[in-house]
Image (tube, rainbow, N blue to C red; front, side):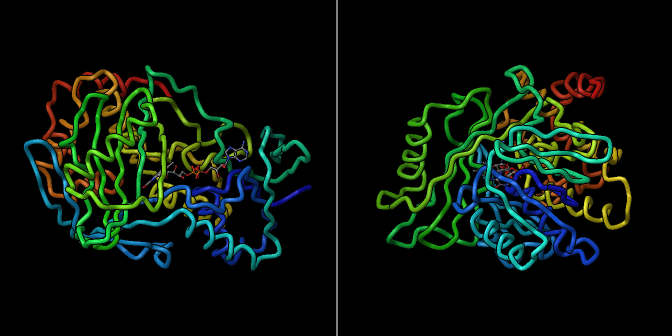
Length: 382
Ligand SMILES: Cc1cc2nc3c(=O)[nH]c(=O)nc-3n(C[C@H](O)[C@H](O)[C@H](O)COP(=O)(O)OP(=O)(O)OC[C@H]3O[C@@H](n4cnc5c(N)ncnc54)[C@H](O)[C@@H]3O)c2cc1C
């Protein structure tokens, strides 16, 4: 079976690309096949990100904040996000939104099956499942089939367990989210709590770590229970939803174009920011660029721009500092948030900053710890 485009993996990146293709009049009638092993009908994750204007998925934003808190043992700040808004989208709302739109297009088909391989020919690429093979001009892949080898030497894992809790009494301030609370024990590596109240009685609370290994299941549960009881002083609550995630924070190279006519998107394409794990906003920028290039008939296997390589170097340097334990994440983020304006930090972490602000942020960190990692990562061949 031959298609114009195949999207392998219908998670955040695959469905974001599909959405952008269907918005583009010159591409929306192309034959498009989307394959995934899952039907994408469960609320398996919550995405948060920040942006300046109403974005592509504004209509399904579940909650938003203009003020966030940063807490450490000796430092506490309320961050006014200025031109940025921090937003939350629930996975299930996103999947339903894009899949419902796609149903209006007879040229779009979905197949639910595990993909066994993706191969390429001179002018096409082929996706194979147990039962069929599908061919197209381009395959956009977000499965892990081409992922690099991640080891304890080149990668940290960002792992977290989150609960949406509901209380009978109004206990939360829905106007203020808690981006990072580093006042918790740091015994297992960089560790913080993330608290996003969506009403006075509901909040997502996530116990998050950056370390080489994930924990035993009960350890996440115990940490969440302790924090809710002792720090938030909440004893009467129910758990309305639970999520668990592991995101790579890696020095390993995720290839954008692993084989001919195959374009990696999403985490598989390296769009998870190595130093923070945030991915949603980078996926949106990438798929918008892919669609613009397809529309213009340009090569979509474009190399990274200088600016993108610069941010990748910043990320790799921080990962190297954390991996070699020169500093902890708690120390690094505390210094950055203590000495810089929140809006400039958010711009820096979104790869949208001015170079002069990058210098100011870097100057708030101890040069000795970062210099060797920075030089080492500059010399790494990719
Ligand atoms: C619980 C959780 C919370 C997160 N929260 C945030 C957040 O708040 N903000 C943020 O920016 N990022 C967040 N992330 C990180 C990132 O945004 C998500 O992982 C995002 O879903 C990545 O998009 P993706 O398309 O690359 O991968 P996915 O969304 O995981 O999509 C990949 C798809 O490929 C399919 N697939 C994989 N292998 C195969 C195969 N062999 N055959 C067929 N199908 C296959 C999977 O079923 C999946 O649907 C979170 C991640 C998790 C796990």
